[in-house]
Amino acid sequence: MYLVSDKIISLNYNGLQTQKLVKTDKLEILSISLEKDATFPEHKSPKDAQLIVLEGAVEFYIGQRVYHLKKHQHFSFPKDKLHWVKANENSKFLIIR
Image (cartoon, rainbow, N blue to C red):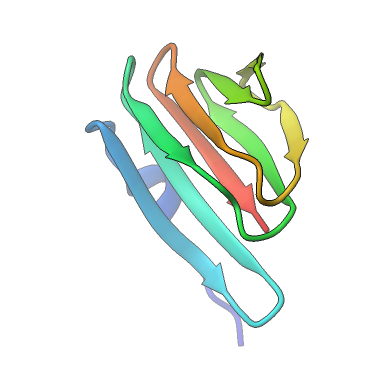
């Protein structure tokens, strides 16, 4: 089966918006939209994860450090570590875990 979707581009910049794109037993892909200055609150990932910035620029806070990520950058992070994200401009990113 083939599926084409516009879910990522249609996700608005309105605070924090999240949408599951894929969910299987082994894989989950989330599309996140953060309006400038909005935050994705502190939480832990249940699995090791990958973040891919599609648009904008974000600050990723984890383990007493901050990582400045921008469009087209990729960031890996481990499960079970508290982290949170702040948008420096309207931003969209994927979480793959």
